[in-house]
Length: 118
Length: 113
Image 1 (tube, rainbow over the protein chains, first blue to last red):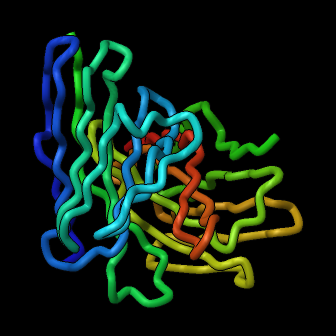
Image 2: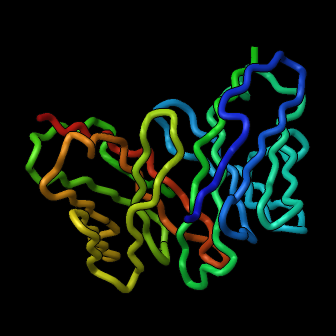
């Protein structure tokens, strides 16, 4: 149980184009999903917290117009990198908390999406 | 400034020994602390959570301690196996509703046969 999927697993795009990454909770409902990015041998950096049906909360320094987040249902959140540039190349990982998790603070992570902008 | 520090150098140990990884933090007051395992090119996998009022937690061959005075957590893997080789991340639980996780950079563990 508690599986989170991401699609695509890898994507290469040209500079200036937009890329959409999907995050799905497969066997549970998630009120809250999180988006992280990770550079090689670095820690995961929280980009934004996404709550179903409301606007995402972005961390300081993360451009909300560049990284568009939509949490349209209890099982799906999307991250769109708009007008991508080579410096946006990174490993993007989502996670989700179970709606019925109660006091459980456990987050379930997706397998990640490797974005390369050429 | 706020920091989470994990030993950036890889930890190399012999199979069967106990691996001990350290997580130190400054200027944070976490409600809980989590440990994750991450394999190359994959997302983190949850291992253990310990709350601020707990001193120790165990799960099979894993043990976590949490000292809020020292601002330190220790993560132990007993009877280590080559399959335990991975990067281990600690994460502090913060923020409203304690939703927010702040991660350390991780320590790479290599268990040799």
